[in-house]
Length: 622
Image 1 (spheres, rainbow, N blue to C red):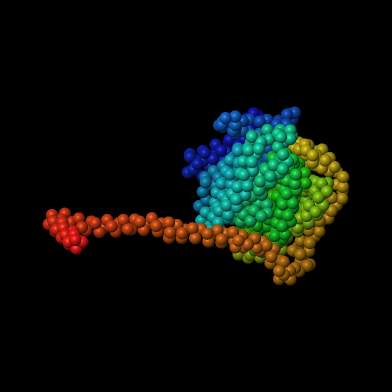
Image 2: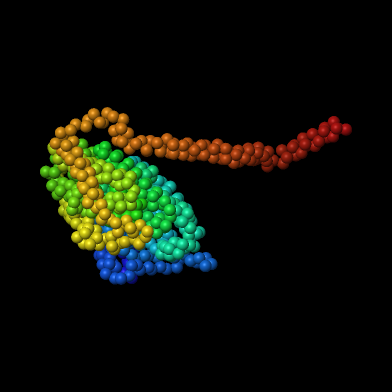
């Protein structure tokens, strides 16, 4: 089956082409065709993962020549290894759950183009699977850009809404800016390494044929591209606005596809980062700052999807932090578990929005009684992301914090622990406000979602509970051993258990304090924090530190002003000169046309007048 791994991304692409050209008019057929296609891909991905885990070989590579120039040959190919095989399963499973859920979610919307939606979803899945399986920088960059295009199409799916169109453009433009750094990094790789193939580059690095300074530059440039896709500071502003898309799209983008592409890129090129001095430190501190920065904003947001969006930013920061401190397996483990509980949280939030027709958590309340299944799975997701044992998030977050502690970067460890406290607080703030108390919006009639929506949520809730065990001592840390990265940072993994109890006590204490604080403030309302809303710090955080406004002043408005000046210069000066020549020519032509009457008498008269003038001039001159 491994030899046929190319079928995993090929099936969604075939579905996309089929829907686009043949079944576009048949909306139900298009949706079920897309679901059947991703189910087939998921089944194949599971078989490939099983075969790879049982075989002794660490990777299988397939490539085809694209073009040659002298001794240089460019290939398009795929690489199946532990990293890509796990990502294939995660991407196809989450996409399958979201596609099934979408059948129920979108059926309540009027005039929804199911065919267009499912064709975009299929193309998106193909792009992400192609990115995951790419064996060289050229292939991964092509799929990388296709993922960006698909995200633009899906975020702006409600194209009749100006806010959705603006959010789609914002996501596309910001990620393209970051991709400029990625492209420069790829060109540097081609220039200094003479190849774009990942395995060949790793061989050159192990042989010491590329200087560490050059590797650092290349790694940082590539990381800029990863920062854009994974919305790391300062490229973070597009991700919360991406909530303008349908809730299933939000789950797809924020769980296992687009936003983790940057984390996966760093993991895929980890040899380069590991060999480049200080490159991993850049990754770690950018991730740590993003985790803390985004978590602080999530404390104050009132839109249920935006709280989850900032939660995603924070968790992506955790993954980057783990990679930055040498916790390769920890970062990928957290990526895997996060895909399940974050998809669950977004689908549960979509179920609430589907019932309440509002995103504002203060319009909700008392939904635990009227939507029991949604409430239970949302609480399970919240417990998982908060790191409560034995749920999936507990095991993966512990490995991240343990990697930070073992690396000796205590500042990053402290940032991670503070982020854990904030995460627990804002997630259970959501739980108590949304599902506790009484319904505040009296004209609403909340009800439980249909089975086509609740079944995917229940499956993801089961995974949010159990998926973490693949990286737990109960299964001999199977995940870490399977994706283990052999480098100078392997000592971090060998020393993971030193201080393990201390880290666990601290992290569980932080989680407990966060949940207790949310219960006191929003559960039993024993603490009133209304006075906080009047402070400058609250207003600063509530307004997302005014980064959108700052970018608007220092980037958007100057750029728009420059554009208007360019338009005025082009129309007034450049076009004025061209149009002026045309006007003079037309005027001369009009004057000459009036002289040419076609009457012989007029021509004889003109000749006589001319002769007389010449005679007068001759006589005057004489």
